[in-house]
Length: 488
Image (tube, rainbow, N blue to C red; front, side, top):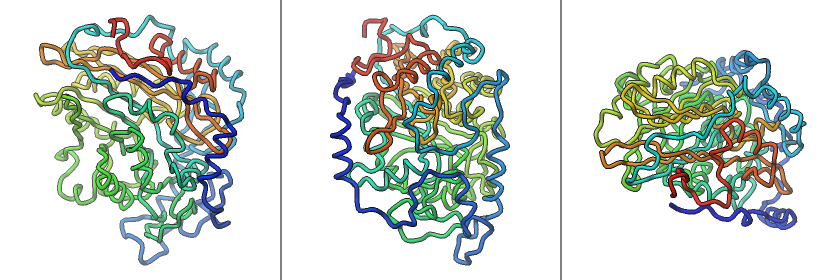
């Protein structure tokens, strides 16, 4: 297995970091770019956020739905049964992410309710066939790529590293597994306004073409920056998938195809017209180092935005379709494993809901080997589930945010998950072990960045290890071995 680089390599001197980023920044953008923290309401104040007013805009848009988004976002949020959840109640960002936001107090409160929220501390997560010999591969996963205004502005302004500046210190860890997955939360549709008009590239975060909460849209070089940093495929099925409506979904797919970055969870209008959802192949297949892996993605919602062409696969409304996609992959003798990436759950709660647990069980029974969950913006625990046919499945109910501008220790805490797969002598592929690297979103001189939590944000590391199990933590200096108890 490949080794992770030394942690010390990333201990950058703040002054040097500031100097490098200062040298790479372009001249100040026009005043209209307004790099102040997103209010979450600024889009509603724009003329092009309401009903269609531009005769040249794409006819697939219904501007009224964009207004409905403002209401649907707030109606979805509610506390867990324990009454304990992360501080925020929406997808807004706060540029002051560097403050501690009472991290110690939050951690203390969480620990006092941890057994209720995420279950008791368990023995080491283990898998029955962990030590069997065979060909091995490691699958990596991170959570939501959710670029609030401060992050999008930073990525667009940094001419040297671009969006990679948000995670540049993690690139060796992203490149360590054989395959690396992330959730692309929102369209990367280029200069497309909420009303559906393609405009000239502004070159900065203009809050017209490129926007943040509640309707995100990113510059397409986010895709290539993710790819060059080690991300091998993304999910496009999430509640922000239609933030630029049908045209935005089409354009995002076009940019992904142009970059050669595999994706799953959405389809073009043309594909939708050709086949109904149940007759569509929603999957993608990756081939790497002797393993063919099938992937399926789905989402619980599109934030109330209509999906007239059924471009987005729904986890619950189209449950039977999702499960059939998994079964089809499982039945294919050329497929070694099936991985599902559902966008589900209650935001800002560490406790998986009954609907998540039920669907996860059904997914494993249908033939999934791994389930990487997203959407709650905070970490949720892991499970080892055993299907009726005896195969073991690994589930993490929420990976949390990979990069975001959300405040508070819970939303700044995430993990890079490594899952080991072995193709045994019997030809069957199974999970051999799981490791996690705690991550933390940091505000440092020069901007926002995600780093290994160890040595940077101790509360984030403690929180991640309590939710995911301290026994599976991998040190930043440690070699990447998913079943260390087997001797490598």
